[in-house]
Amino acid sequence: MVKVDSKGRIVLPKEVRERLNITPGTEVDIHEKDGKAVVEPEDDPEQIIGRMDQLIAEASSEREEVKPLDEGTDPIAKKHRDAIRRGAEENSDE
Image (tube, rainbow, N blue to C red; front, side, top):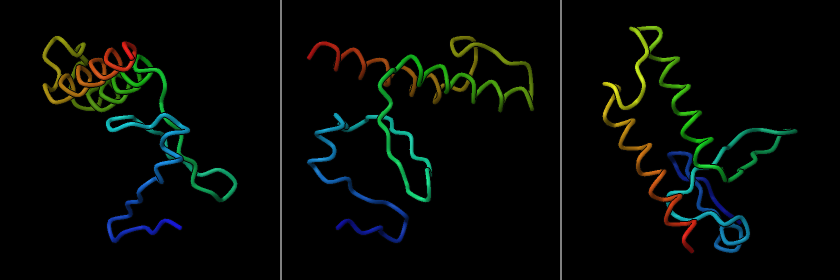
């Protein structure tokens, strides 16, 4: 049995991580379904990047004109996007 710590964190058992191919840095979606928490690994890095771009665009549209990530958007968001792409490339080589 897994316990939730004071910050709401849990550690997925090794067997579950292996079956779902969840490795360090894997993006996961956590949502409720039928009263249960569901953890699903995100398989498509481009989908993650697309969703991230959409969230940035939505947040930016409330403040100013939306710019593509490579044209003046927050460097932290760009760094995160680049890290996801690098991880995807490394995993595709395995």
